Image (cartoon, rainbow, N blue to C red; front, side, top):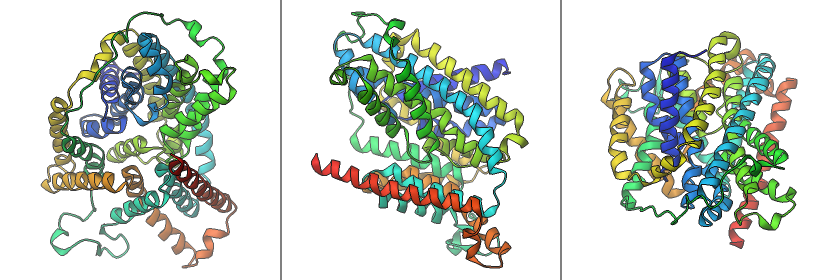
Length: 491
Protein backbone atom coordinates (compact mmCIF):
# COMPACT_ATOMS: atom_id res chain seq x y z
CA UNK A 1 0.00 0.00 0.00
CA UNK A 2 0.96 3.67 0.05
CA UNK A 3 1.87 6.01 2.87
CA UNK A 4 0.13 9.28 3.73
CA UNK A 5 3.10 11.19 2.28
CA UNK A 6 2.84 9.26 -1.00
CA UNK A 7 -0.91 9.94 -1.12
CA UNK A 8 -0.35 13.69 -0.91
CA UNK A 9 2.55 13.52 -3.38
CA UNK A 10 0.22 11.74 -5.85
CA UNK A 11 -2.49 14.34 -5.19
CA UNK A 12 0.01 17.14 -5.83
CA UNK A 13 1.11 15.47 -9.07
CA UNK A 14 -2.46 15.01 -10.31
CA UNK A 15 -3.47 18.61 -9.54
CA UNK A 16 -0.36 20.09 -11.17
CA UNK A 17 -0.78 17.72 -14.14
CA UNK A 18 -4.40 18.88 -14.61
CA UNK A 19 -3.22 22.51 -14.58
CA UNK A 20 -0.53 21.80 -17.19
CA UNK A 21 -2.98 19.84 -19.35
CA UNK A 22 -5.70 22.49 -19.10
CA UNK A 23 -3.54 25.48 -20.07
CA UNK A 24 -3.15 25.67 -23.88
CA UNK A 25 0.50 25.32 -24.87
CA UNK A 26 1.45 23.12 -21.92
CA UNK A 27 1.42 19.32 -21.98
CA UNK A 28 1.76 16.28 -19.74
CA UNK A 29 5.28 15.77 -21.13
CA UNK A 30 6.24 19.30 -20.14
CA UNK A 31 4.81 18.76 -16.63
CA UNK A 32 6.80 15.55 -16.08
CA UNK A 33 9.99 17.12 -17.52
CA UNK A 34 9.75 20.26 -15.36
CA UNK A 35 9.15 18.39 -12.10
CA UNK A 36 11.58 15.55 -12.74
CA UNK A 37 14.34 17.31 -10.75
CA UNK A 38 12.10 17.15 -7.65
CA UNK A 39 12.49 13.37 -7.67
CA UNK A 40 16.09 13.77 -6.42
CA UNK A 41 14.58 14.46 -3.00
CA UNK A 42 12.60 11.19 -2.94
CA UNK A 43 13.13 7.47 -3.21
CA UNK A 44 12.01 5.80 -6.46
CA UNK A 45 8.59 4.72 -5.16
CA UNK A 46 7.62 8.19 -3.93
CA UNK A 47 9.00 9.75 -7.12
CA UNK A 48 6.76 7.47 -9.19
CA UNK A 49 3.66 8.64 -7.31
CA UNK A 50 4.54 12.22 -8.29
CA UNK A 51 5.43 11.48 -11.92
CA UNK A 52 2.49 9.17 -12.62
CA UNK A 53 0.18 11.75 -11.05
CA UNK A 54 1.59 14.39 -13.42
CA UNK A 55 1.21 11.99 -16.36
CA UNK A 56 -2.40 10.98 -15.71
CA UNK A 57 -3.47 14.47 -14.63
CA UNK A 58 -1.80 16.05 -17.66
CA UNK A 59 -3.48 13.71 -20.15
CA UNK A 60 -6.89 14.19 -18.50
CA UNK A 61 -6.66 17.97 -18.09
CA UNK A 62 -6.51 18.49 -21.85
CA UNK A 63 -10.27 18.00 -22.15
CA UNK A 64 -11.06 21.26 -20.31
CA UNK A 65 -9.91 23.75 -22.99
CA UNK A 66 -10.91 21.30 -25.76
CA UNK A 67 -14.53 21.45 -24.63
CA UNK A 68 -14.80 25.03 -23.40
CA UNK A 69 -12.68 27.02 -25.89
CA UNK A 70 -12.19 24.54 -28.79
CA UNK A 71 -8.42 24.30 -28.19
CA UNK A 72 -7.04 20.82 -27.29
CA UNK A 73 -4.95 21.12 -24.14
CA UNK A 74 -2.90 18.10 -25.21
CA UNK A 75 -2.43 16.47 -28.65
CA UNK A 76 -4.53 13.50 -27.53
CA UNK A 77 -7.56 15.80 -26.98
CA UNK A 78 -7.90 16.79 -30.64
CA UNK A 79 -11.06 14.77 -31.27
CA UNK A 80 -12.57 15.91 -27.96
CA UNK A 81 -13.19 19.28 -29.61
CA UNK A 82 -15.37 17.72 -32.33
CA UNK A 83 -18.33 17.02 -30.05
CA UNK A 84 -17.32 18.65 -26.76
CA UNK A 85 -17.25 22.22 -28.10
CA UNK A 86 -20.66 22.00 -29.85
CA UNK A 87 -22.12 20.74 -26.56
CA UNK A 88 -20.60 23.72 -24.74
CA UNK A 89 -22.08 26.09 -27.34
CA UNK A 90 -25.50 24.64 -26.51
CA UNK A 91 -24.95 25.40 -22.83
CA UNK A 92 -24.03 21.79 -21.97
CA UNK A 93 -20.40 22.48 -21.10
CA UNK A 94 -20.56 21.00 -17.60
CA UNK A 95 -22.33 17.90 -18.87
CA UNK A 96 -19.70 17.47 -21.60
CA UNK A 97 -16.86 17.90 -19.09
CA UNK A 98 -18.33 15.29 -16.75
CA UNK A 99 -18.87 12.83 -19.61
CA UNK A 100 -15.25 13.32 -20.65
CA UNK A 101 -13.94 12.90 -17.08
CA UNK A 102 -15.95 9.71 -16.56
CA UNK A 103 -14.75 8.33 -19.91
CA UNK A 104 -11.15 9.24 -19.03
CA UNK A 105 -11.43 7.39 -15.72
CA UNK A 106 -12.86 4.26 -17.37
CA UNK A 107 -10.18 4.32 -20.09
CA UNK A 108 -7.43 4.69 -17.49
CA UNK A 109 -8.73 1.77 -15.43
CA UNK A 110 -9.05 -0.56 -18.44
CA UNK A 111 -5.51 0.27 -19.57
CA UNK A 112 -4.26 -0.33 -16.03
CA UNK A 113 -5.80 -3.82 -16.18
CA UNK A 114 -3.95 -4.45 -19.46
CA UNK A 115 -0.71 -3.21 -17.91
CA UNK A 116 -1.11 -5.61 -14.96
CA UNK A 117 -1.97 -8.54 -17.24
CA UNK A 118 0.38 -8.20 -20.21
CA UNK A 119 3.61 -6.67 -18.86
CA UNK A 120 4.69 -9.81 -16.90
CA UNK A 121 3.89 -12.00 -19.94
CA UNK A 122 5.94 -9.80 -22.27
CA UNK A 123 8.77 -9.61 -19.74
CA UNK A 124 8.86 -13.42 -19.45
CA UNK A 125 9.19 -13.74 -23.22
CA UNK A 126 11.84 -11.02 -23.32
CA UNK A 127 13.96 -12.87 -20.75
CA UNK A 128 14.99 -15.17 -23.61
CA UNK A 129 16.47 -12.21 -25.50
CA UNK A 130 20.21 -12.11 -26.03
CA UNK A 131 22.14 -8.95 -26.93
CA UNK A 132 21.19 -9.62 -30.58
CA UNK A 133 17.44 -9.46 -29.90
CA UNK A 134 17.90 -6.45 -27.62
CA UNK A 135 19.74 -4.60 -30.39
CA UNK A 136 16.99 -5.45 -32.87
CA UNK A 137 14.24 -4.38 -30.45
CA UNK A 138 15.88 -0.97 -30.06
CA UNK A 139 16.29 -0.77 -33.85
CA UNK A 140 12.57 -1.58 -34.12
CA UNK A 141 11.75 1.29 -31.75
CA UNK A 142 13.83 3.66 -33.85
CA UNK A 143 11.87 2.70 -36.98
CA UNK A 144 8.51 3.10 -35.27
CA UNK A 145 9.25 6.68 -34.18
CA UNK A 146 8.73 7.73 -37.80
CA UNK A 147 5.01 7.58 -37.01
CA UNK A 148 5.43 10.60 -34.74
CA UNK A 149 5.88 12.77 -37.84
CA UNK A 150 3.05 11.75 -40.17
CA UNK A 151 3.52 13.25 -43.60
CA UNK A 152 7.18 13.97 -42.86
CA UNK A 153 8.59 10.52 -42.23
CA UNK A 154 12.16 11.32 -43.26
CA UNK A 155 12.27 14.20 -40.78
CA UNK A 156 11.19 11.88 -37.97
CA UNK A 157 13.79 9.25 -38.84
CA UNK A 158 16.47 11.92 -39.19
CA UNK A 159 15.58 13.39 -35.78
CA UNK A 160 15.71 9.93 -34.17
CA UNK A 161 19.13 9.08 -35.55
CA UNK A 162 20.39 12.57 -34.77
CA UNK A 163 19.43 11.82 -31.16
CA UNK A 164 21.43 8.57 -31.36
CA UNK A 165 24.42 10.49 -32.77
CA UNK A 166 24.34 13.12 -29.99
CA UNK A 167 23.97 10.43 -27.31
CA UNK A 168 27.32 8.92 -28.38
CA UNK A 169 29.26 12.11 -27.57
CA UNK A 170 31.69 11.52 -24.71
CA UNK A 171 34.10 8.77 -23.70
CA UNK A 172 34.02 5.55 -25.73
CA UNK A 173 33.75 2.49 -23.46
CA UNK A 174 36.02 0.26 -25.58
CA UNK A 175 39.26 2.30 -25.64
CA UNK A 176 38.41 5.15 -23.22
CA UNK A 177 39.01 7.66 -26.01
CA UNK A 178 36.80 10.70 -26.66
CA UNK A 179 34.56 11.15 -29.68
CA UNK A 180 32.45 14.05 -30.95
CA UNK A 181 33.94 16.19 -28.17
CA UNK A 182 36.25 19.19 -28.74
CA UNK A 183 39.40 19.26 -26.59
CA UNK A 184 38.29 22.18 -24.42
CA UNK A 185 35.12 20.30 -23.36
CA UNK A 186 36.64 16.91 -22.49
CA UNK A 187 36.72 17.60 -18.75
CA UNK A 188 32.98 18.30 -18.75
CA UNK A 189 31.80 15.58 -21.12
CA UNK A 190 33.29 12.30 -19.94
CA UNK A 191 29.74 10.91 -19.71
CA UNK A 192 28.38 13.01 -22.60
CA UNK A 193 25.33 15.24 -22.26
CA UNK A 194 23.25 14.54 -19.18
CA UNK A 195 19.71 13.35 -19.86
CA UNK A 196 17.89 15.74 -17.53
CA UNK A 197 19.10 19.03 -19.09
CA UNK A 198 18.47 17.61 -22.57
CA UNK A 199 14.86 16.64 -21.98
CA UNK A 200 13.96 19.74 -19.95
CA UNK A 201 15.51 21.93 -22.63
CA UNK A 202 13.65 20.18 -25.46
CA UNK A 203 10.23 20.11 -23.82
CA UNK A 204 10.12 23.07 -21.44
CA UNK A 205 12.63 25.77 -22.41
CA UNK A 206 11.87 25.36 -26.14
CA UNK A 207 8.15 25.81 -25.43
CA UNK A 208 8.88 28.98 -23.44
CA UNK A 209 10.96 30.34 -26.34
CA UNK A 210 8.03 29.73 -28.69
CA UNK A 211 5.59 31.45 -26.33
CA UNK A 212 8.00 34.39 -25.91
CA UNK A 213 8.19 34.78 -29.70
CA UNK A 214 4.40 34.96 -29.94
CA UNK A 215 4.33 37.51 -27.10
CA UNK A 216 2.10 35.52 -24.72
CA UNK A 217 -0.85 37.73 -25.69
CA UNK A 218 -3.18 34.78 -26.04
CA UNK A 219 -6.54 35.62 -24.50
CA UNK A 220 -9.06 33.01 -23.49
CA UNK A 221 -12.69 33.65 -24.26
CA UNK A 222 -15.12 31.07 -23.00
CA UNK A 223 -18.59 30.83 -24.53
CA UNK A 224 -21.18 32.70 -22.50
CA UNK A 225 -23.31 30.21 -20.60
CA UNK A 226 -21.06 27.26 -21.44
CA UNK A 227 -21.38 25.90 -17.91
CA UNK A 228 -25.10 26.53 -17.53
CA UNK A 229 -26.98 23.41 -16.45
CA UNK A 230 -29.21 23.27 -19.56
CA UNK A 231 -28.97 19.51 -19.44
CA UNK A 232 -27.38 17.77 -16.48
CA UNK A 233 -24.97 14.87 -16.63
CA UNK A 234 -26.28 11.44 -15.73
CA UNK A 235 -25.08 7.88 -16.17
CA UNK A 236 -27.76 7.54 -18.86
CA UNK A 237 -25.34 9.41 -21.12
CA UNK A 238 -23.34 6.14 -21.18
CA UNK A 239 -26.37 4.00 -22.00
CA UNK A 240 -25.62 1.86 -25.04
CA UNK A 241 -21.99 3.00 -25.08
CA UNK A 242 -20.47 -0.14 -23.54
CA UNK A 243 -18.98 -1.41 -26.81
CA UNK A 244 -17.73 2.08 -27.69
CA UNK A 245 -16.03 2.40 -24.29
CA UNK A 246 -14.31 -1.01 -24.43
CA UNK A 247 -13.30 -0.61 -28.08
CA UNK A 248 -11.90 2.90 -27.57
CA UNK A 249 -10.00 1.92 -24.40
CA UNK A 250 -8.44 -1.07 -26.14
CA UNK A 251 -7.49 1.03 -29.19
CA UNK A 252 -5.87 3.59 -26.89
CA UNK A 253 -4.02 0.87 -24.98
CA UNK A 254 -2.84 -0.82 -28.19
CA UNK A 255 -1.65 2.48 -29.71
CA UNK A 256 0.14 3.19 -26.44
CA UNK A 257 2.01 -0.13 -26.71
CA UNK A 258 3.34 0.83 -30.16
CA UNK A 259 6.42 2.98 -29.51
CA UNK A 260 6.19 6.46 -30.91
CA UNK A 261 2.67 6.48 -32.39
CA UNK A 262 1.20 8.89 -29.83
CA UNK A 263 -2.09 10.05 -28.35
CA UNK A 264 -3.44 12.00 -31.31
CA UNK A 265 -3.38 8.83 -33.45
CA UNK A 266 -5.28 6.91 -30.74
CA UNK A 267 -7.90 9.64 -30.44
CA UNK A 268 -8.42 9.92 -34.21
CA UNK A 269 -8.58 6.15 -34.74
CA UNK A 270 -11.06 5.65 -31.88
CA UNK A 271 -13.23 8.50 -33.12
CA UNK A 272 -13.20 7.09 -36.66
CA UNK A 273 -14.18 3.64 -35.39
CA UNK A 274 -16.99 5.10 -33.26
CA UNK A 275 -18.32 6.91 -36.33
CA UNK A 276 -18.06 3.77 -38.50
CA UNK A 277 -20.07 1.65 -36.04
CA UNK A 278 -22.51 4.38 -34.99
CA UNK A 279 -26.22 4.00 -35.68
CA UNK A 280 -26.31 7.74 -36.48
CA UNK A 281 -22.90 8.66 -37.92
CA UNK A 282 -24.30 11.89 -39.34
CA UNK A 283 -24.65 13.23 -35.78
CA UNK A 284 -20.97 12.78 -34.96
CA UNK A 285 -19.36 16.20 -34.75
CA UNK A 286 -22.58 17.97 -33.85
CA UNK A 287 -22.26 17.50 -30.10
CA UNK A 288 -23.15 13.94 -29.12
CA UNK A 289 -21.70 12.02 -26.13
CA UNK A 290 -20.68 9.11 -28.40
CA UNK A 291 -17.78 10.98 -30.01
CA UNK A 292 -16.68 12.56 -26.75
CA UNK A 293 -16.60 9.17 -25.02
CA UNK A 294 -14.55 7.62 -27.84
CA UNK A 295 -11.92 10.34 -27.76
CA UNK A 296 -11.47 10.61 -23.99
CA UNK A 297 -11.58 6.86 -23.30
CA UNK A 298 -8.87 6.20 -25.86
CA UNK A 299 -6.46 8.97 -24.82
CA UNK A 300 -6.48 7.81 -21.20
CA UNK A 301 -6.13 4.24 -22.41
CA UNK A 302 -2.68 5.35 -23.53
CA UNK A 303 -1.43 5.78 -19.95
CA UNK A 304 -1.29 2.07 -19.17
CA UNK A 305 -0.52 0.99 -22.74
CA UNK A 306 2.58 3.18 -23.06
CA UNK A 307 3.95 1.75 -19.80
CA UNK A 308 3.88 -1.84 -21.14
CA UNK A 309 6.87 -1.57 -23.56
CA UNK A 310 8.62 0.76 -21.11
CA UNK A 311 8.63 -1.73 -18.24
CA UNK A 312 8.90 -4.99 -20.19
CA UNK A 313 11.36 -4.04 -22.95
CA UNK A 314 12.86 -0.73 -21.79
CA UNK A 315 11.35 1.08 -24.81
CA UNK A 316 9.40 4.32 -24.18
CA UNK A 317 5.93 4.20 -25.73
CA UNK A 318 5.61 7.98 -26.17
CA UNK A 319 7.41 11.21 -25.36
CA UNK A 320 6.06 11.29 -21.79
CA UNK A 321 7.23 7.76 -20.99
CA UNK A 322 10.56 8.73 -22.58
CA UNK A 323 10.78 11.26 -19.77
CA UNK A 324 9.60 8.65 -17.23
CA UNK A 325 12.39 6.28 -18.25
CA UNK A 326 14.73 9.09 -17.24
CA UNK A 327 13.37 8.90 -13.68
CA UNK A 328 14.32 5.21 -13.50
CA UNK A 329 17.78 5.95 -14.91
CA UNK A 330 18.34 8.77 -12.42
CA UNK A 331 17.42 6.40 -9.58
CA UNK A 332 19.76 3.70 -10.91
CA UNK A 333 16.98 1.26 -11.89
CA UNK A 334 17.18 -0.54 -15.24
CA UNK A 335 13.81 -1.06 -16.93
CA UNK A 336 13.50 -4.04 -19.25
CA UNK A 337 12.87 -7.81 -19.13
CA UNK A 338 14.39 -8.22 -15.65
CA UNK A 339 12.59 -5.23 -14.12
CA UNK A 340 9.64 -7.09 -12.54
CA UNK A 341 11.68 -10.02 -11.19
CA UNK A 342 14.41 -7.75 -9.78
CA UNK A 343 12.05 -5.01 -8.53
CA UNK A 344 8.77 -6.67 -7.49
CA UNK A 345 8.11 -3.98 -4.88
CA UNK A 346 8.52 -1.17 -7.42
CA UNK A 347 6.28 -3.03 -9.90
CA UNK A 348 3.50 -3.33 -7.31
CA UNK A 349 3.98 0.34 -6.39
CA UNK A 350 3.51 1.37 -10.04
CA UNK A 351 0.19 -0.50 -10.22
CA UNK A 352 -1.02 0.99 -6.93
CA UNK A 353 0.18 4.47 -7.91
CA UNK A 354 -1.65 4.36 -11.25
CA UNK A 355 -4.83 3.13 -9.55
CA UNK A 356 -4.62 5.87 -6.93
CA UNK A 357 -3.82 8.59 -9.48
CA UNK A 358 -6.76 7.61 -11.70
CA UNK A 359 -9.10 7.76 -8.72
CA UNK A 360 -7.65 11.11 -7.59
CA UNK A 361 -7.94 12.47 -11.12
CA UNK A 362 -11.63 11.59 -11.17
CA UNK A 363 -12.32 13.07 -7.73
CA UNK A 364 -10.29 16.25 -8.39
CA UNK A 365 -12.02 16.93 -11.70
CA UNK A 366 -15.56 15.54 -11.56
CA UNK A 367 -16.99 17.31 -8.53
CA UNK A 368 -15.24 20.72 -8.54
CA UNK A 369 -15.30 21.03 -12.36
CA UNK A 370 -16.77 24.55 -12.33
CA UNK A 371 -13.72 25.78 -10.43
CA UNK A 372 -11.28 23.56 -12.34
CA UNK A 373 -12.48 25.11 -15.61
CA UNK A 374 -11.16 28.51 -14.49
CA UNK A 375 -7.61 27.14 -14.89
CA UNK A 376 -7.71 28.19 -18.54
CA UNK A 377 -7.67 31.83 -17.43
CA UNK A 378 -4.24 31.55 -15.71
CA UNK A 379 -1.92 33.84 -17.71
CA UNK A 380 1.17 32.12 -19.10
CA UNK A 381 3.40 35.10 -18.32
CA UNK A 382 2.84 34.45 -14.61
CA UNK A 383 3.67 30.75 -14.84
CA UNK A 384 6.68 30.67 -17.12
CA UNK A 385 9.14 32.56 -14.86
CA UNK A 386 8.47 30.00 -12.12
CA UNK A 387 8.93 27.16 -14.61
CA UNK A 388 12.26 28.61 -15.82
CA UNK A 389 13.51 28.81 -12.24
CA UNK A 390 12.56 25.17 -11.55
CA UNK A 391 14.26 24.07 -14.80
CA UNK A 392 17.52 25.91 -14.10
CA UNK A 393 17.75 24.66 -10.50
CA UNK A 394 16.99 21.11 -11.65
CA UNK A 395 19.64 21.19 -14.38
CA UNK A 396 22.23 22.69 -12.02
CA UNK A 397 21.63 19.90 -9.50
CA UNK A 398 22.00 17.12 -12.09
CA UNK A 399 25.63 16.34 -11.15
CA UNK A 400 25.89 18.14 -7.82
CA UNK A 401 26.16 21.64 -9.21
CA UNK A 402 27.71 22.07 -12.65
CA UNK A 403 27.12 25.24 -14.61
CA UNK A 404 27.83 23.24 -17.78
CA UNK A 405 24.48 21.46 -17.34
CA UNK A 406 22.67 24.82 -17.17
CA UNK A 407 24.31 25.85 -20.44
CA UNK A 408 23.31 22.44 -21.88
CA UNK A 409 19.73 23.14 -20.78
CA UNK A 410 19.68 26.46 -22.64
CA UNK A 411 21.46 24.99 -25.68
CA UNK A 412 18.93 22.18 -26.06
CA UNK A 413 16.15 24.69 -25.46
CA UNK A 414 17.43 26.52 -28.56
CA UNK A 415 17.70 23.18 -30.39
CA UNK A 416 14.08 22.35 -29.50
CA UNK A 417 12.97 25.80 -30.66
CA UNK A 418 14.80 25.37 -33.98
CA UNK A 419 13.27 21.90 -34.34
CA UNK A 420 9.81 23.45 -34.14
CA UNK A 421 10.75 25.91 -36.90
CA UNK A 422 12.03 23.27 -39.32
CA UNK A 423 9.39 20.74 -38.21
CA UNK A 424 11.70 18.12 -36.73
CA UNK A 425 9.91 16.22 -33.92
CA UNK A 426 11.73 16.72 -30.62
CA UNK A 427 10.16 13.54 -29.21
CA UNK A 428 11.88 11.47 -31.94
CA UNK A 429 15.19 13.10 -31.05
CA UNK A 430 14.71 12.36 -27.34
CA UNK A 431 13.82 8.70 -27.90
CA UNK A 432 16.90 8.33 -30.12
CA UNK A 433 19.04 10.05 -27.47
CA UNK A 434 17.78 7.71 -24.73
CA UNK A 435 18.20 4.52 -26.76
CA UNK A 436 21.45 5.45 -28.52
CA UNK A 437 23.96 4.14 -25.99
CA UNK A 438 22.10 0.86 -25.50
CA UNK A 439 21.92 0.44 -29.27
CA UNK A 440 25.71 0.76 -29.46
CA UNK A 441 26.43 -1.44 -26.44
CA UNK A 442 24.22 -4.32 -27.63
CA UNK A 443 25.70 -4.06 -31.15
CA UNK A 444 29.26 -4.30 -29.78
CA UNK A 445 28.31 -7.24 -27.50
CA UNK A 446 26.66 -9.10 -30.40
CA UNK A 447 29.54 -8.54 -32.81
CA UNK A 448 32.15 -9.47 -30.18
CA UNK A 449 30.39 -12.74 -29.37
CA UNK A 450 30.19 -13.60 -33.10
CA UNK A 451 33.84 -12.76 -33.82
CA UNK A 452 32.88 -9.77 -35.94
CA UNK A 453 30.30 -11.53 -38.12
CA UNK A 454 27.12 -9.57 -39.00
CA UNK A 455 25.38 -12.87 -39.79
CA UNK A 456 24.54 -13.18 -36.08
CA UNK A 457 21.67 -10.70 -36.61
CA UNK A 458 19.99 -13.01 -39.15
CA UNK A 459 20.39 -16.50 -37.69
CA UNK A 460 18.19 -16.52 -34.56
CA UNK A 461 14.42 -17.35 -34.78
CA UNK A 462 13.36 -14.55 -32.43
CA UNK A 463 15.56 -12.20 -34.43
CA UNK A 464 13.68 -13.08 -37.62
CA UNK A 465 10.38 -12.23 -35.93
CA UNK A 466 11.74 -8.83 -34.89
CA UNK A 467 13.07 -8.24 -38.43
CA UNK A 468 9.54 -8.90 -39.72
CA UNK A 469 8.20 -6.33 -37.28
CA UNK A 470 10.84 -3.84 -38.43
CA UNK A 471 9.92 -4.36 -42.10
CA UNK A 472 6.19 -4.12 -41.29
CA UNK A 473 6.80 -0.97 -39.28
CA UNK A 474 8.72 0.70 -42.12
CA UNK A 475 6.08 -0.38 -44.67
CA UNK A 476 3.28 1.04 -42.52
CA UNK A 477 5.22 4.27 -41.95
CA UNK A 478 5.71 4.69 -45.72
CA UNK A 479 2.01 4.00 -46.37
CA UNK A 480 0.87 6.34 -43.59
CA UNK A 481 3.29 9.02 -44.80
CA UNK A 482 1.90 8.90 -48.36
CA UNK A 483 -1.67 8.91 -47.06
CA UNK A 484 -1.00 11.98 -44.89
CA UNK A 485 0.62 13.82 -47.81
CA UNK A 486 -2.34 13.07 -50.07
CA UNK A 487 -4.69 14.43 -47.40
CA UNK A 488 -2.58 17.60 -47.14
CA UNK A 489 -2.64 18.08 -50.93
CA UNK A 490 -6.43 17.70 -50.99
CA UNK A 491 -6.79 20.28 -48.22
